[in-house]
Image 1 (cartoon, one colour):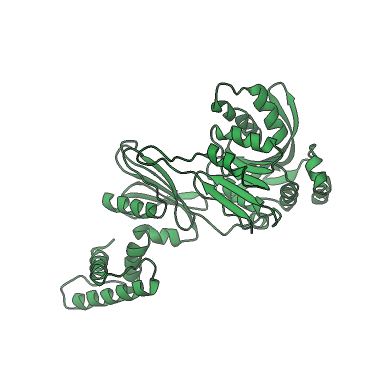
Image 2 (cartoon, rainbow, N blue to C red):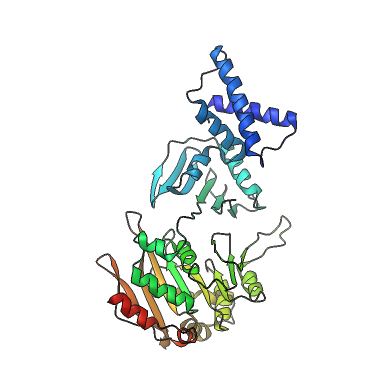
Length: 410
């Protein structure tokens, strides 16, 4: 923030306090106050008592952002091409466009970083302090905020904003972007409508949440969908949707709501489909128990491949307690998970589905048998000629996945 913008911003704040108004909900009033103070500043600058403004319009935008938006970061948040913003230090502000990171020329102060974080957390009801040095929260537009403070970090506050994008809403758009082939999209659409339990996997930033949103767009509009997440990221367009997120403990250490609790509560809400944004720990057991009851569901998980995802999902439930062992978990995963979709991001930042497999429900020792349905071949996701073997849910829905796969191969 330049000295001129800082002066104008302070003058607007003084006038707001003097007049006793609230700019947060009135954009017209904000613009009027800012225009007035920019004009007054320019008049003083012409008299030689202050530096001239190079661009009054740009100065006004910066002042509005400082007052009602997120200050210096607001232009990055408004830029549709920027998908992520992170701050390693006040002078090390990065953004990512199409998966490619770049260091910006922005230089903040430590106080500005803290003020920005406090403003971002205001609407979430969450906090970050020495007793709770990590925080995950959602911004008003759905973007995800993650903050870590010293002494967990060495010196500066670490801030990451993963922007929420509404550009990709369905499988058709993923096909248009080259993230998915049309035959694979048609097959996944049939899987959703057939009530298949779908596991989406991949590394960080490979598009797992985006794919989950696109898959959910194929669900019947009459379905009641319950989503549970650590922080709100999914955005399901349906007429009967309930979205729930976890809650951090209070200053007294009470009131925490975990993913495990949310999954259990969701089963009392008459869901037609349960979606868990991401499984990382013992909540995987509660998800498997829910899916084992016949409830269709989806979730995402970090893994290096589709088969690794199955192996990981077979291990995480063991964290739930010493009375849980693999003799229960392995056959449950094999029987519950119907489709695994693996996402990757290449070195150019392109996100693509690279693998789709279908577990057979059978075990060979401690390995879950699965048939590859789509694999990446010379940069193209192609049907392998394989077919899913668990067909009961498809038949109950009056669907034939083999017919869709043959049409795609024709």
